[in-house]
Image (cartoon, rainbow, N blue to C red; front, side, top):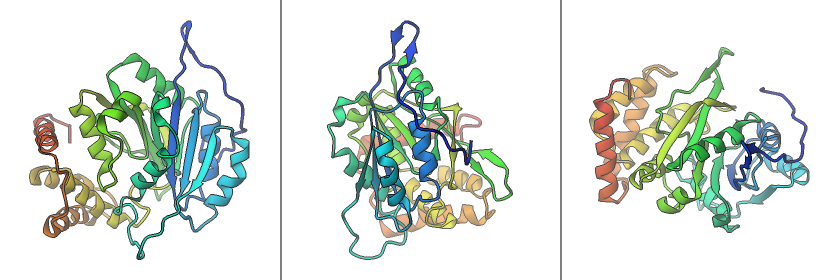
Length: 312
């Protein structure tokens, strides 16, 4: 599918048995410097067999052609609305993801509409290309499980050698690049927190509130930029270590995670970068999720996973 140009086409009604399936999906996409991918992403959403009711793309002052491409495509896609982030940081930011740019711009887009009018709220990154059946299949899974509150598919990336691989992910974790929430779940968790680690905090709160969180391995999307590489691969690993600290992950769990991270390129150094991020956050006294109930719940989950073979 990579590189394929899809012709834009009108929305088709989707049915499930005799009863029509009529979810109203709101997608919000915070994007920055996605000029190399954004047209494929837009055309893939436009070609969905079940299209969103509204798609808001928030451009965070891109320095490439991202905004120009979006403005060119906006008239062709009836449900697409492009807005520009208007705030500027007081000083240059080396790592925008660590500064919470993604959830902040997601919330900026969300604030422009009455999001409670929709049945599902989704975050989609500007480098993720969906297959045409993705939204239809995902909504079928929500319809089949009333307790499903947060769901998504897996990501396929191209390695430096040109091969493709699927990103391994725990079954109850959902990639931050393509999270979809039921409206009930999104309301109960209070939306997205504008802090590093938001994409673990949200799903932990969802399970705390009685919802299921699930990644469906059969729903595959193309990720055009390696995870955590937007501001440098090692910096991304260190950022994930800081996320582990913020989310109250224990030292034993972090050590085990570092062994897995250390298998990625650059080998060994990646694991050290992860540990460095965790230790640096502890040394700096970075604020952790300030909720005792969250801390207890998160650590209970980690203990269960430590006792479950293959869960790490």
